[in-house]
Structures are given as structure tokens and as C-alpha cells.
Amino acid sequence: MADVRLWGYKIYRICGALILVLQLSYVGLGLRCYCNQCPQMSDLPSNSCMARPNSKCFTAVTINYLEDETTESWDYGCLGDDESTLLQCKGDLVPHHVPKTIACCDSGDDCNWELTPKVVERSTTPVPEYEVPKKYENITHIALLISVTVCFVILIITVTFVYLRYRKRELEREQILEEAENETFIGTGETLHDLIEQSQSSGSGSGLPLLVQRTIAKQIHLIKSIGKGRYGEVWKGKWRGENVAVKIFFTTEEQSWFRETELYQTVLLRHDNILGFIAADIKGTGSWTQLFLITDYHENGSLYDYLKLHTLDTHEMLLLCHSASCGISHLHTEIFGTRGKPAIAHRDIKTKNILVKKNGTCCIADLGLAVRYISESSEVDIAPNTRSGTKRYMAPEVLEDRVNKNHFDAYKQADMYAFGLVVWEVARRCIIGGIAEDHALPYFDCLHSDPSFEDVRKIVCVEQIRPAIPNRWISDPYMKILTKVMIECWSPNPAARLTSLRVKKTLGKMLESIELHTKLSSQS
Ligand code: ADP
Ligand code: MG
Image 1: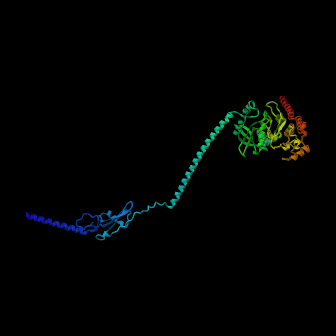
Image 2 (image 1 turned 120 degrees about the vertical axis):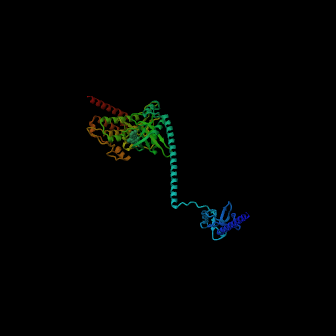
């Protein structure tokens, strides 16, 4: 038994020795590396480790970036045998952009002692920003420019829109206020005829109240120019759908505007054969003023225009002449009483200042040169303007400057001279024996279109020429009387001329006669 125990002890000792030899041979085959954090291996010298077969020694440097300093710590040791650890060794060739870098070796024991891995310090300068390529840079600029432009346009559109809305509201507000203001003076649906009727019966008899006139003037729309005179331009206009004539005076003609306006508003002047006055207004400030005179509109225009276009029968001729004489007669006649009318002389009677109404009668227009006779003081109220009458129609005493300016009858007589010439102009267009003369101005055969004062004086005063009377006129009973009327009107002696009242009566009788004659002949 003791022998068995002895042999067992011997075998145990032998196996132990074998294991040790095997252990030692195994260790003897590996690579020894220097290490500072060594694994527990009792049979190796201190600071040494054994690398696995085919493995390597390593040296690792760790960089610690602290807030105010950077430190390095060095580690040495043996690598494991897996590929991943080997890969780290490539830091030797390709430096790692990491704080830790490892270099490896297998050239001999403790080969890592002298290894110095490449340490790439973390750049303290910031990593450069991504650089936009040049071609993209241009596109960026364009895109930016477009965006800014679009934003700007949108901004402008918005501002304009807001402003226009604001203006529209303001205008609407103003319009409402204006309408409300206007309504105060003129009710809706009231016509010019209504307004004038009212003012005639309840007012002073001199025209519409001033505020009504201003309101009408403000509401007028000008349509087209219908005539030009020496003192302004006449327009066709509309007031609430009704036609009106608007005479717009040149800015320099304020005195003419004032005079004409004043005369049209003479008490009791309103008459069928005097142009119907509606309103007058003066607008503007400083150097720029607009002077309006609003009257009835007559689409036939002036007697001058009418005669150029139309020939007449005897009745039409007498209607024109008689109505014109009625107008002049009304002007010339003084109406006595507390609300009386002064006598007025026109001083510029001519076919261009007489208008033809739709019914074939005339009305006297253009009172810009008229004078009034103030009977209480026996004074002639002459216009302060420098305007003078039309030379062609001037009476001989006016041409010779023989008129006593304080003698009112002289002005009426001069009107009658001019009226004689008007009757002649009308008579020429009357068809007698199937023939009518062409329209012509008086003295057309001896004066040119714009004669001088002296030219006219020579013909009218010195040579005492008067318009020619065709023989045919004498053979017609009506024309014979009419010729007598015109000759008596243009007499060189002012006192011998017919008065407007006389002419009115004579022509009135002739008209009555022809109307009776027409009536009788239509009955038989
Ligand atoms: P001026 O003072 O400048 O001579 P007028 O009052 O004589 O102005 O008008 C000039 C012309 O305008 C007239 O000859 C006529 O042809 C036209 N006219 C004036 N008033 C009217 C009116 N109410 N209706 C139609 N035409 C008119
Ligand atoms: Mg005129």
C-alpha cells in the first residue's frame, strides 16, 4: 500500500514537472512587451506582458482636452489577437482624428518601449464652414435678389392697395357729405324749370339764390365745346340729365364775367326772348380762377350758324325777326315800380349774339357789353371793362365817336342800327320767287373778314353805303315792309331810327297777318 502511495506521489511530481515545462515552453514562444498596466502574470518580469501569437505590442497616447490645458497619457501593453485591436494600430500610418492614437510593433521584445505614435492635435481653429461652390453662389445671389424684389413688390402693392382703399373711402365720405350739403339746397327730382319757377314766384325776381347757383355749378359735367367768342369758350354741359350751356370766361376776363352775371340777374329781366340765365360761379384761388356762366342750352346755336345752314319761308323769317325784336324791346324797356327793371342797351347786337330756339324763335345772348339806365339818378351805368362792340355792326355815330355817353337813348339807337343789319342778314335767306341769297355778313362785298375801325368808318360814315336790297324784295308785300323796317333802322340819323317797340309792333302785325293768311289758305 505504501508503495502504491509512493508511486502515486512520484507520478504526481512528474506530471507537475511536465506541466511546468509545457508552461515554460509556451511562454517562451510569445513576444514580450513593455506594459504599464500589466496583467497578472507571475512568471514574467515586472512591467512585462506576453503578446499572443501573431499579436503585437502597442503604445497608446491619449490626449485629454481640458478647459484650459491639454494633457497626454501614455499606455504600453500587449494587444489581443483579434483583428479589431490590430486595426487600431493603423493609427501609426493613418493618424486618427481622435484623442487616442495607437502604434504597434512586433519587431522584438519590448519593441513598444520606443514607439512614438503620431498624435494629431485637435485643431483649435474652427473646422472651416462648408464652402459653397462658385456656380451655386451666383444662383444663391439671384434667388436672394428675386426674393427681395418679390418682397418689395408685395410691399408696394400692399401699401398702394391700402392707400387706394383709404382714398376711396375718403372720396366716398366727401361725396356723401357733398350730396348731403347739396340736398340742403336742391331736393332730388327738382328740375331747373321748377327751381326757376320757384325763385320767380317767391324770390327777388333776379334769379336763383346764390347757394343754389353754386350747387348747380358744382354738379355740372362739361360735354363738348360749342362756341368760341372773344371772351371765353362756350360748352354744352349736363346738370342732372338736363342740357345747359356753360360759358367759361378767360381768366383775364373777370370783369366781363362779373358784368354779364350782374346783368343777367337784373330784376325782371327773364323773358322768352332773352337767353335764360341759370347760375354763375367763380372757382379757384390765387392766379388760377374759373369763371362760369350757366344758361339754357339751344342746340340750333347762334342765328349766324342757323342762317348758314337754313333757308327760310316768310313765316320763319318773320318769327326770327319778330322774336329778336321782342327780346331787344324787353331789354330797352324800363319797368317802373318798387321791383322794377331798368332799361338796358345791348351794345353788341349781331347774329352771333342771338340764339335760335327749338321753336324757331330767337333769344338775345351775350350781355357782356350791356349798359343800364338808372332812371332815379338819370345815370348810365357803363361796364368798367374795356370791351367794345363788333366793328362791322357799329352805328355811324359810334364809329365817328359822336355819342353822348350819358345819353341813354343813344345806346338804344345804336342797337337799332345793328338790328337793321341783322334783319337784312335774315331776309337774305328767305325764299322769294323761289330764290334765296347765300348767307352773308353785312358789308361782305366791301369789307374783308376782319376790318379795321377806319375801314368800316369809311364805308358806313363817309361813303354812307348800306347793304344792298335785291329788287325781288320790293315785289313781295312782306319783304317790302321788312325792307322799309331795316332801312329805317340803319338810318344815318340816330333819332330817325325806329325804336325796338315800334319794330316789335310792326313785325308782330306782319306775323299775325301771315299766320291768318296761312290759316285761311289751309281752310279753303
Ligand atoms: P362771347 O361773349 O365770347 O362772344 P357768346 O356768349 O357770344 O360768347 O357765345 C359765343 C358762341 O357760343 C355763340 O355765338 C354761340 O354760337 C355759342 N353759344 C353761346 N351760348 C349758347 C347757348 N346758350 N346755347 C348754344 N350755343 C351757345
Ligand atoms: Mg358774343
